[in-house]
Image 1: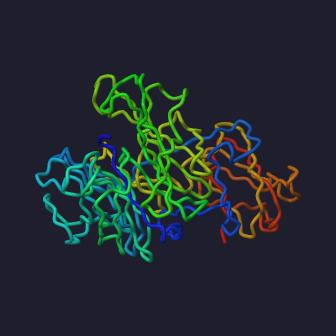
Image 2 (image 1 turned 135 degrees about the vertical axis):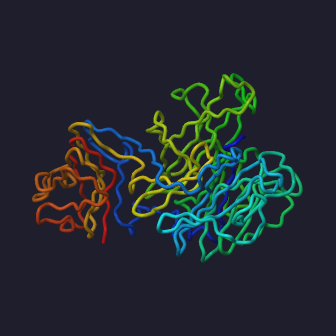
Image 3 (image 1 turned 180 degrees about the vertical axis):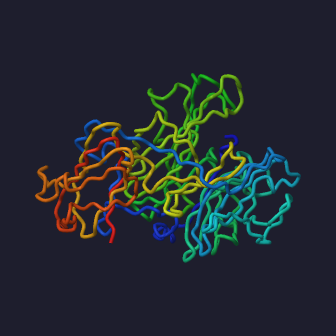
Amino acid sequence: MGRFVMPFLDFAALRLFVIGATLGAVMSSADASDEPLHLLFWEQQDIRDGKNVRFEVHAAQPHIALLAEDPGRTSLWYSPAHVVRVEDGLRVYYRRIDRSLPERLDHNTFCVGILGKDGGFVCPDLGLLPNSWGGPTNVVLKGSPRKATWGGFNVFQMLGDFENGFQLLYWDQPEMGDAGGMIATSPDGIHWKKEETKRAVFTEHNDAYTLTVNHRNPGEYLLYQTKLIDWPDKPFLDNIGNKRRVISIRRSTNLHTWTPQDVILEPDAQDAPETEFYFMKVFWYVNRYVGIVMKYYGDPAQPGRHSALYRHEALFSRDGVQWTRPYRYTDFGVWSYADPFEYKGNLCLISGANEGRSMALYRLRKDGFASCGSDGEGSFWTQLFEMPEAGLYLNADCESGAISVEVLDENGQVVDGFGRDACRFAGNDSTALPLEWGERKAAELAGQRVHLRFALDNARVYSVTAKN
C-alpha cells in the first residue's frame, strides 16, 4: 500500500471488558443510564429545531514537538500507535521507520517514549533490543527477519491495561504462507512475546487496518480493514493497477478467527471521481464511534506509482457499520493511529508531522472535534433528556458573542423560572460554564424529561455535561 500503510495492534477476548477503563476511554457512554449526562452537538441528529445554525469540524492544532525532524536523516519518519497513562505521565508507543539503515530489522521498529506531566518527552533506555542508530535503546518489538509477501512489519494500535495485560494484532511475515495478522502479548507493555504460530491469523490483502471493541457487544472485536476491489475505469492508475481501496469490517471474539471482509464504506457520487478510502481509524467517544478516514487520490503526474495526495475526513456512527459523513468537504487536517486522550485539560492526539518526519502532540478543547454554532443569530434545541441531579455545565465559545439558555418541558414550553433572560453568557470561552438561572439550579428539575434551547449570537456550542 505504500508509505502510510501500517498495520495495527490490540488485545484479547478475556480483556475486552476492561477497555473502557484504559486511557483510550477518554470517552464514556452518555446513553447508558448509569453514566453522567454528556450531550455532544456535532451533527444534525444531536439537535432539533435548528434555525440559522451550522455544524463545523475542528482540526487539532500542533502543540508540543515530541521528536524533531532530523535534517541529516530524510529517510527517518515516525508513526504513533498508542498512548497509555502511567505514573510519571503518558507512555507513547510509535513506530520508527528508517529504511536507509544497514540492519534490516531496524528499518521498522516498535518503540516507546514518555511524555511527562511537564510536557517533556524522553526515550527511555530499556536495554531490551539493540539498535543500529545509536542513542537510547527504547525498542520493544521488531519484525520478522523474513521478507514479507505483502507490506512489512506494521503495528497500528495496542489495547489492554496493566491489570489484564496488553495485546497486539500486528502485520508481519510468518514462517509459512503469506504475510498477515500476527499476535503478541505483554504483561506490562514493555516485554513482548510473539505468539508461536507458523501462519498468520488472516492474510487477505491489506495490511492497513485498525481494531476496536464493539461498544454495543463488548465480547466482540471490530476490525476496519482496507479491501481492494476491481475498478476497470480507474481514472489514474497507480501501484495497484485497476483496484480501488475501500473500507471493510471484520468481526472476531478471540482475535484468531475472523469473519470475511464486508465492505461498509466506499466513495460515492459526491466524492471526487479519483477518491479511494485508504485507511480508517475508529474509536468510541461518549455515545458514538468516530472515524477518521484517510482519503487517497491517484496522481496523474505519476502514472503507475503510489500517490502522495491525501486528505482526512471525520465521520460518525452509532453502530460502527452505518456511517454519516457531515464533513466530507472539510479536511480534518491530522491523522493518528492512536486513540485521543486527555492531557492537561485538552483532548489530544499524537501524530506524525512534516509528512511524518517529526512527531508532535496535537490538541483540541474538550469535546472539540465539532460544534454547532451561528455566525449571527441562531437557535437550536437539544434532544429530550432526563435532567440529572448533578449540575449542568456548558462547553461553548461566545468570546465574541453571546449565548442564552432556557429549559423546555416535554411539550416545548418554557419551564417557569428557567427562561433565557436568567441564563446568559457573553464574552466567554470555557469548557465548563455553569448553567444556572439566577438562584435556580438545574438540579431542581432532576428526573424530569426536558430540552435545553440555545439562542446564539456569533457563538459555538460543543457539549453539555453533568458533574458531581
